[in-house]
Image 1: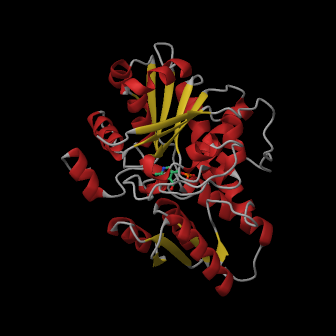
Image 2: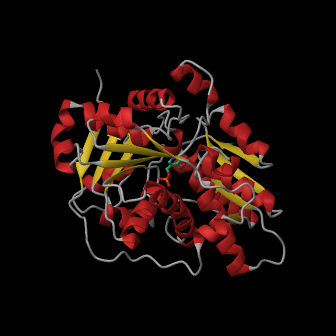
Image 3: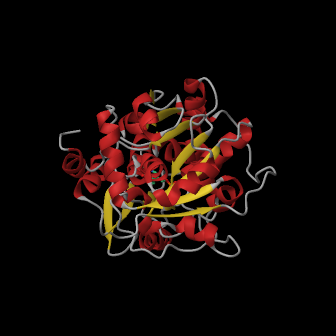
Length: 365
Ligand SMILES: Cc1ncc(COP(=O)(O)O)c(C=O)c1O
């Protein structure tokens, strides 16, 4: 049997305030102006909690967010709103971004709503259903013969050449403001879940690609002051946050894997330059799991009537590994994942690859 997980705890946690700006207005109030916007549901999972030996377990189901099957529109819509407030362009610029699917769909959706063209770049291993979802939002789709990281570089280069405005969820040298607004946009889902739970979780599992969602969770709970234990979950194949925290200086490192996990939204080789310092200050543990854990998590969610895609189920994949792997027993104790734990998971997408969901779960989504 191959390697099933890697795990590292954070030696660089810091209690001090985060260097993170307060937004000028109410982010949730902005989201409520979006067409089709509604709070997503929070589902209690008592049977699964019992099976996994934790006190209580909830999942925030993002599959219905604005009809886009993923949480990402919270970030893209808010960032575009902030950009247009700041820049006020004479003519609507074309928006461009790299994506594994969900962020690009969100950018295309927000662009179309406001009358902007969108050009969306995807890596070569993007499945047809996700490309079609992008086209269905009116976007031009460019398939790049490379990884997600190659796609980020290509989107930036083509945008510079054509004068397009990049709306990227990952930050890199010289490009940090918009990814910051995207992270701020994601905080809405944590605010909703806090109200829905009627009390703070003790643990939150945050699946990570470039780290935008994990940064948003860190920012939200620091502001709120409840400080749950945050655990990041990545594919074994694309564990750039874990590589970074395990490095001697805790600086940004690239993943060593091939970045071809079925957890497509998490197939990122480099942490976001902006998210990383926040995550390093506030995320306690970094777990990477193989694809079998994602498949098992999809089936467990389906049994509880939650349709969750490969990346969507990754938080539960991490919890399954921590609960079941003998090699993670010390981690379970160190993180306090026992009878007193009140654990929050985020199912960040629905079945964005319906054919694979069917193959894994054995019925239609
Ligand atoms: C479904 C899903 N979950 C989680 C993530 C991770 O978000 P981030 O790249 O901000 O870490 C993504 C990113 O595309 C995603 O599509």
